[in-house]
Image (cartoon, rainbow, N blue to C red; front, side, top):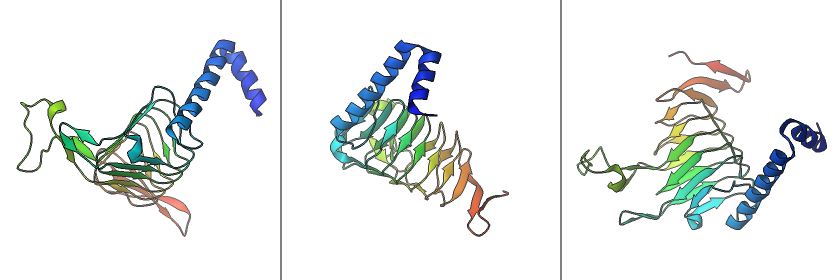
Length: 214
């Protein structure tokens, strides 16, 4: 279907005002990308982008709805050296939250769904002798690093996924919707669940996905 046909169809289905609003939103998102210095990108107005000097995005970042990308350099009196690097041709739906105080890297040609959270830290420390206690407000607890996050090329991350610190996701992996990723994900695998576990692997010889029986 041609672009003209799509526009005619949208005008017929949704009316001229809805179509005009969509075109304005697309133009605004493209302008927002240029203001941020993200080449060939579309970032919807209303998105929350913080710590831009610590964020490097390759050309082709595209989101259909608002996103929240934050590189946190200071919080509660502490200072950090954050780094967020996103490869080319990153596509997301909406409500993707990427938050770093150390390092988060996302490879090329990745696809993210909606309501996704990726972070390399937590509010408070609950594992060591300096742990925080319930009596203290969570918002006042110092940010505690949990480890760098690495996501390889051509990964598909489904809706409502949480990827926590200290995790490496191998290239061409698929993370099923509603998964919580606590451990490394091997390349060319499908993981699902909370915590996420490998449910399928890709066999290069047979060129097929093979189910893993637990």
